[in-house]
Structures are given as structure tokens and as C-alpha cells.
Length: 433
Image (cartoon, rainbow, N blue to C red):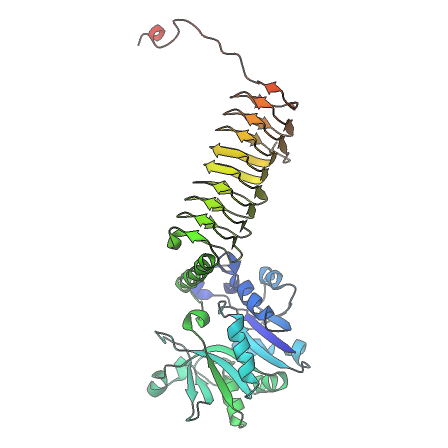
């Protein structure tokens, strides 16, 4: 049995935000949830250490247990808060950081495997700019003897290129025993998690460093670093989409969410944004400047350009959603078309129906939302307002410019507008122009 402690109590002072640092999103998901997803793939149990007054973070951690670090006295003190929940745990315990959200299950697996041959294992990296990272000091055999924080390192130690990523893994009993022995006699007066490395080495145990790429292990402490992590994640998501059989005509302009699913032979134009919850089947074309969120697009549909699909929308096979068309909680039937300047909300549109330019479903009465139903093969003329709740029958025709407030039977023609009246001589000439 393997367990993980996720340290997520940081305020993120450098973020200059009221939002806990671990709740800042990358690719549409909080940093904490990214790390939880990786941890869940490797560890049997997870405990999240939160700060006081972080209810949103505790909700994001569910269903995993959380403990609160009331006083922020350092990373070693934070990890020790989980002792009450894991003290009797018979296996290994790893300590991870919520502001290292891009660490992969593969890397965590290597960490656990390395621990099997050592008393303690840790993750390390060789960043292009070591900046103020703690340095990993090794002996001649490559075993780690200690971690030196930048503030406490001398010139020789600061010249070391191998840097600490903060993540450690050790048997539970040993880890908590070492944590209780950690002292705060350092430049910051904090209890450092990394001090367990020297304690393990001092007992004659081998400490193994597992190296991983900087892009995977870098810490996120500022808005700039958050943006860099977002860019790294987007590169990975774009690469995965193209390797899966999708065409991105201008990859750097497409924005994905962590859970975007694209089928094969999907073509995505420039400046398309996928918010969370989007699934796109094979052979779909999504044209430039479209925005999709919480929706499903079936095989062979065409979306955009400049289309917006909002949560709850399903676009069935071969349907067309054109420029400046917005769908919300709507089903656009197989082969149906809404090609121009329309809003279709809380509606079901039957197969092969045609929605004319400027059509809207008036779905909100100021208190409640109501649904509109449009039957198969119906034709809705341009600039029609469908005042819900209302049903337009199969193969019905609604004249352009109508305001439809009553149901239209199957195969009927509905015209709901004022009669045109022409006034001779009352045009511009009659006004003296």
C-alpha cells in the first residue's frame, strides 16, 4: 500500500490573489486537481494538507481526506499534519507539492520504484536557471547526503546544478519519525521537509535522487510561472491531439482543456477555444474563432466560424452550426442547420430542420427557463422569435419575421407578424428631402 501527502496550504502571496495558490487553473482545471489525477494513478491513499479558511480547496480535494495546517511553519511542519491519518500506514508515503502540478504518473512511479532500493527517494531536476532552488548534494557514489536551501548554501553549494524538486518518498514510520526530529535553526526559521534527507543519510541509509525534466517539476509561485506552465500544458495537449489523428491548421492558436476529446480526422481552425467538457467525434470540422464548452459534437458536423457551443449542447451527425450562432442546452438534430446569427437555447431541433438567420428561442421569462421543440424537417424563417414553451411541428414552415407564441401543428404554415401597410407619398419625398 502506498500513500501520498499533497501539500496545498500555500497562500501564493506572489500570485497577489485571494484564491489559494493550488486552486489557480491550468488548462481549465485547478493545479490541485492535476496533481491529484497523477497521484491517484500511483498511490492507494491520498491526504491533502490545506490552509485555514480554504473551503473551496477542501471541496476540490474530495473525496480524499484533508487536514488543516493552522500555522504555516514550513513544509516539514505541513507534512507532519497528516501523521494522525497515516501514522499506522504500513507502506511508503510520498510528499508532493500542489504547486508542482505537472508531475506525471510515470515519474511518480519511478520515484516509488527507486524507494524500493533505498531508505528514501526524492525527485530532482537540472533547470536551465537554478535560481533559488535548493541544491542536492551527493557523495562520490551518487547517493544524496543532504539538501541545502539557497538561503543557507555557500558559493560552492550554489554552483551545484542538481536541484531539489521537493518530493520525497520513504516508509511511513521513518518519515514521520524524521519529521518530528527536524529543527528550524535556519535562515527562515522554518521546519524544512528536505531536512529529512540528512536525517536518513545520517542513519546510514541510501538516499536516491530520481531526475525528471524541469518542465514537469518546476514550481509555480507567480502569475508568470503559471503562464509558463499553461504554455507547457497546451503544447502537450496539442501534440496529443495531433498524434491522435486531428489536424490543427494553426496549432499555437488553439486552446485545449485538460479533458478535451477529439476523434480522428477532426480539423480545427485557428483560434478555437475548448473549455472543459468537450467531446468531438470523427470527421468534424471546427472553423476559426469558435468557442466550445460542455458539449458533444457528433461525427461529420461542421461548426463555425465564430460559433459558440455552451454547456448541455449536442450537435448531431452532419449538422451545421454557422457564424455567430450560439447554442445552449440544445440538441441540433442530424443534418439540421443553423447557419447564421441565431441563438438556440433550451431547445430540441429535429433532424434536417433549417433555422433561418436571426432566429432566437426566447427561453427565459425572467423567472424560469422554458424549452422550445422544433420538429424534423421544419423550416424557420429568418428573424423569427420562438417564445417558449412552444412546439413547431415536423415539416412545419414559419414565415420570416414571425413571433411564435403558440404551438404550430405538423405540416402547417405559421405567420405571426403585423400586416404590411404602404403609404403612398409618405417616403423621403413627402418629408421635403
